[in-house]
Image 1 (tube, one colour):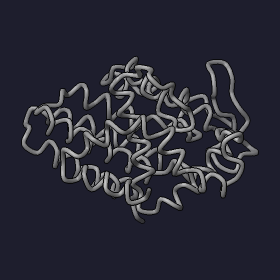
Image 2 (cartoon, one colour):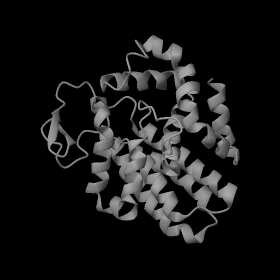
Image 3 (cartoon, one colour):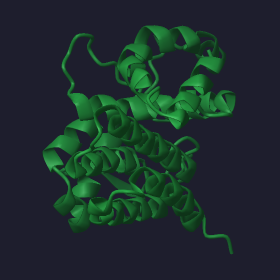
Length: 264
């Protein structure tokens, strides 16, 4: 039987060790990040969302590693706490989409607030939990002693709150550096995907199931695909422009940026 978690971890390790290969001081950090990746990848093998999959978790985490590499090239060092908080935010910001990740998820009822659960028996997939995934993701971290003891929980929670691409961030608002990087990782993962047309469809259908699509902007799947390029430039690019410039610091980063512009 194919172990998809191990396959994802092997690719994750390759990128991670490439960035930290010459830094003996980062041995403990590497182990923490590997354990976090194992937790995330293992949970996402259980996801039945067509957008938030193991592949998505891997893709966004590789973007995160690419961002760390670019920061390292630009200023010469990356603080270990920054790397851990950034990667934890990326690895777990969408994990709440998965039914069963929380202790109180039972009998087709998913926890959505401290005192409420939602009957998901009529959902086609767990994408129906989209609007609640940020809360659920933060609860998952809280329920994991290993994760919560190794991160700045307040910082990670704020990053999770702005990671959802269906939420529009107010222009000129100071959302914080790590928040910007986490949000950018979600945008870049989508826009740089070699199968971007398929991923746009998966994104739309998943967000639609979760009532996260603004029907005033996008009236149908065809309308979403027709308007998405302009939506990227007008709404998403301001959130990711600085990070694309940062990624140009490395060869791999420039490849990622080239893929994005090729899709536009």
